[in-house]
Image (cartoon, rainbow, N blue to C red; front, side, top):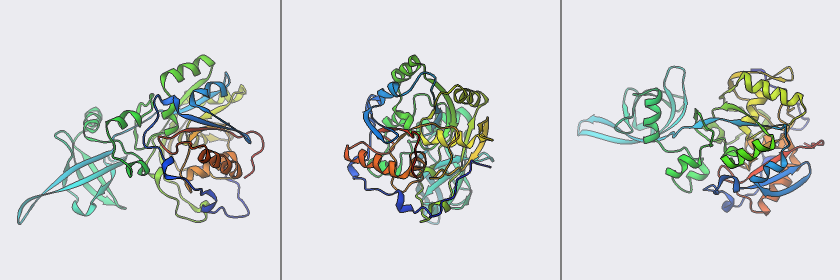
Length: 366
């Protein structure tokens, strides 16, 4: 794929440039209720404003357009048993599976633990309705073929599976029934993600109605967020990092509406880094076009944004690719000040945390 150019910098960007100290007690393990009551830190150029997500109506103008990711998170964590006959009689082993993505051959790529306890050809029983056969192991992942497909698979998975909470939440508590609602946007419709577009979790029906009354337009796009979104950056020169690929689609209608907003002088504001990465992937010759496929676009300082005018997003992990993305939008020094303010004012961080609205203004210093 050809993606918008990233300008070269004379000095290599180091991973440590995107680090910051985060107190552990600022990592949110549950969302606030109602959703739109979360705090919102608005960074408009060099000026910071503390508010609530409900204030979003005041910061957007009639004719502005929000771009929302309508992917639906599947309950991708499964626990089952593998049965095997041995010289001592029937034996069973507990197998934990985390579904990663559907493959073209109809199987699912999955992380299996413990992988050494199961061999290709063996079956894992997850519930009375749901089971899967391990067809092969490649690059540390198992390829599972389930006994069900379509809506039957979706229903059985909903019963047997748990939400795939991010590692920093899963380390503090297990997923439960509340997460099946909390870790899903109110407009989710296209199943396939194993992580939520978390900035969108702040929206509820009253906020959507208030935005519509204000004259704010909305477009939906789809990017199936993969587990790779949580992979750490392991290279010191961040420009050599390779992004994981995720499937996305920008429809003809969404592309036309976004282009019309730009032409009319309105602002295009993706909600979440997933929506931003997708619409920038759909740019050709300086214009957004309908697009479908896998994107591994990597946005770091020096990137030229051609669609997004601002970004609503949560607060991200130190040394993550998402810290690099927001630094590309706002400038590294600004982001350092924004995050220092967020820590000092005890904003809640990560997937269930508070939100920021990043409006670059004219001068961006990398």
